[in-house]
Image (cartoon, rainbow, N blue to C red):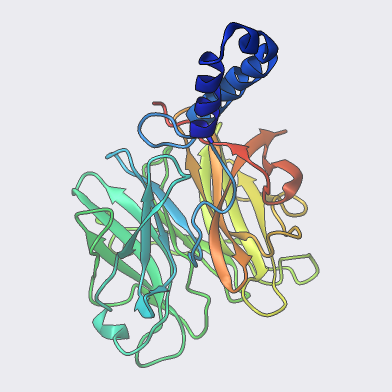
Length: 356
């Protein structure tokens, strides 16, 4: 398009005096069009390749349960439930981005299955935290052991945010069903405690303190039940996908429910808040993000903060049979986080601030 407009401008400049007078108005129109196109290009693709605007989805592939880590190296890393690449399984997916908009899929962060789950293919909902004191990254995820049908919480480590991660050799906690899934690690900025949140399977969302090395629970600690399913409330007969964000001295617990993946999906994001990491949590009535005609079953989110301090909700929603990665701005209103319109955005949006 720019080339065509430039050719038109050149043609105007090479006309004779009479022709120039006759076509002066068209010439001005061409100049305006060229300038508008240049400004548009700058807005969408500034130096460095970062985006100034975007349209959902931000990652057009099956990438369920995205959990975002902002690393000291300047990159955002996102981790997701197992997937396929070239028809071959990926145990734990990982992607990276400079701006939360343009993502590069990096492959498998857990290329070797743990010995205790070597014969199965059930690797769900990872979360990675940076342990700066030990110079490593710790991944929490869920898997199904070879000798049982219930899901287990598991731990793996790596010296790189993209992996490869290596499992620690034994599950952290197992159950009879899917109650021990969707882990999220959180360092409490007030107490310094290392915490792990998790839960699903029509059981409560729980939190428990981790040991200093993050590879197990602190001896003598006990799980605390924070939020309970409520079959009388929409989206709450099953709750899962816990994510904690700390802002303005308040702990916000995001969670999702209640049917993510069947042929009759009914899934949304909700939120509760508390003055401490252990609650008690007050729930906001209703959902802050639910389906629209374009994007069914949005949920299982993480929260990322840009260079300007704005929070963004990163989540999945269905396109066909794939759960693609989505992005929308969080606005805090009346002490609660909100998403504009309460639905996934479908038009072009201003991109996160990269500080560049």
